[in-house]
Image 1 (cartoon, rainbow, N blue to C red):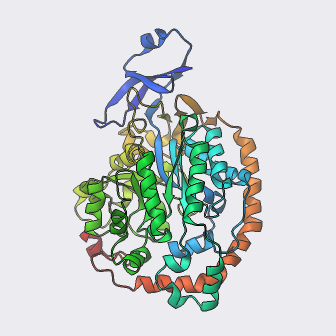
Image 2: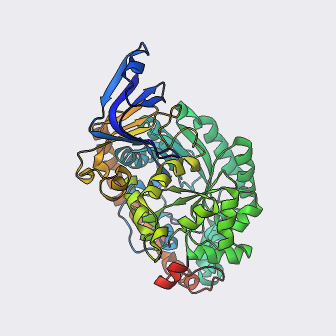
Length: 512
């Protein structure tokens, strides 16, 4: 059914940042048919039933895009603190003790991210589904969850065929021989295994209901063999698909690049043909000036994940420098066990505030408008969907959210974008619409039975916490002191050409 959204304060999010103080939005056949001050006559002229949503007490905005998350971590919210990435990875993805979940269990984990997304005004998710087991159940379960909730989603097929000994610096010097032997005995899928799995998922899910995409997810350069990365580059070109890859998230990874390639990760990707406008680099914190120029010249994207970067102590993404170089910057929550939320309004707040620190030049500080742009058109561009989503414009998909003007954070209403970033919480979102379908109306989900799903998720999540997590911790325990030693040694390794953010000071932060 066509929908007429009447009388709202419309924030289009287009390149001119056009706003209508009391405008109408006409949605038809899953797209935005018209935007204007009074579209009642246009709606009547359709000659078909039209649902009217009274938006006179609402702010109408484009749906938010979460450009980087890991829904497979949903059962581990709040499980960890004070762990840098390398130690957190050991706990969350241990070499022994990882549970083999059913498709339904994967489905329920993804539901946590999907429902939090809808409730916080997210209409598109780019889900970097880390599932190193190289079996189909993980992506099958996630895809069904997104189809059932009605969200738009790009889902990566994880590609990760280099073990710990080949992807961490100093590993063979520090990890004892017996543990190294055990690590070498653990089976690792081949390049062919991963590429076959990608093609299987692409055939089964890509393009389903016009909302699902299956994309390429080489986990990180150091975790992928050269031939696997080259296969990704070729598939990205032949299928015109995004590549979603973790790059230089931590200082340890910068040290790893020097040890493995004698150049930076970005230079390595460029040499293999992976640095293009289709590529999104997740985190991209430990970049040299040359790296930033390369990313900009390639018109590649970067996902900024401020909550997880802060929680893991990874550092601060050079957002302004990347944008000035010509790169696209999107916004992501990262996984629910490193940011511990899929609420993109919370992520926007962090992005709008973080970059005011460490630079005395206040005219260069990040703004709420910057954060909003990263959460809408920046995310759309990362998904290669900028012509379809990310702003409210005629012809684009009808991905729309409504927020309550009477929410405390909008009183008085000075600027809707600033107050979205600084003042309100996700409770202000009343309606979430994807492709003209209302997924949430007046804070009630219409696409699924939320109470029933919540009960099933809670039961399965508690079982995971009680039964699976102790086995995961036991699997990680023998390696903990050795990964900690690798981390500490990496922290003390000089990195020529990079500002050392490990002990931030006003001097070195301002230099960025």
